[in-house]
Length: 234
Image: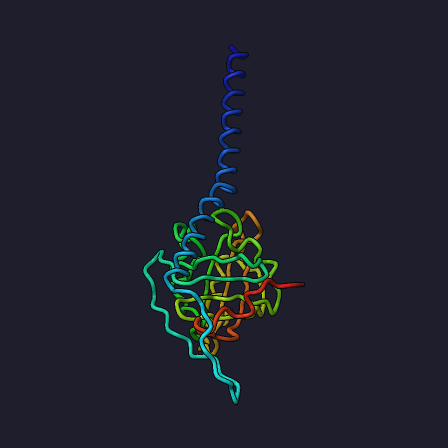
């Protein structure tokens, strides 16, 4: 009887181990594969919808030309993609869609936009979140960003280049990081910010890794791809 019970218990433990292993494989690898394909397809769809970025005819300039004003971006429905993020430090092929919302379902489809934050390029804080592991892990390398690195956000009509200014690690409850002026709740913004958030440390949701970047320049898509899309060289 004891031998039989031990045998059954061993089989149950073995089955549990196999199921746990399968879950880990699904969570870490399969979700990356499936979400990665979905996100790549979304990027391709947005680029086709927006049309190619072709340089516009230019005439000799007699004085420096100011950046064009930021085009307004309509607030999309929850889950809808509306922008693409390019991070040169993450490689020349890095391109991930931004979708409205930061819920579980939205973050499967790309980088999520905090609905209470402003849209790309607007004065205030364009705040976004992404996974460091699983579901395409768009912010897997967020801790590698360095001060001065470019983060480029493409919309239907413009390219917006932000420059990394600071990093911090906070608790999930410290929502002031996505305030209109990062870490200064209640202060009226006068500049355009981008805040990127991801879970920290890797494979844990105990804290948040946060990167703040400031809008540096705006270019119309008709002027072609900004030079900052070239991969970063250390």
